[in-house]
Image (cartoon, rainbow, N blue to C red):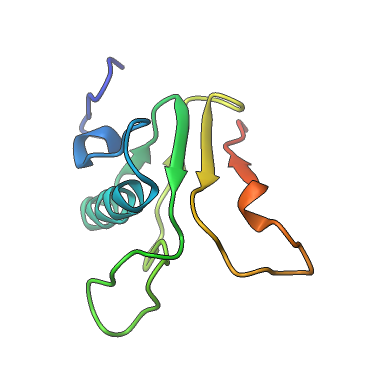
Length: 114
């Protein structure tokens, strides 16, 4: 699949503004929009290769019933990265400490291949 191409079976997050050059807030908004579109269409969402900042703290909610900063998943959706260690999501901005982790912003999430 070429860069930013969507197919009948998948959507590409880049088509919603998800980019390695974006701020964490812009990527969080783009990812929320891409997830919602994939859920509505009943198809998988593809994340391209790269390291993407995600601000989990300063995202404005689309409605008043969920917490700002959340990546909203309201129904089943498959989200597939380019490959392990090729699609990397990094917290951009302070995220409240959890599980006694003094620096949760240093954590990163990578996709895995089954």
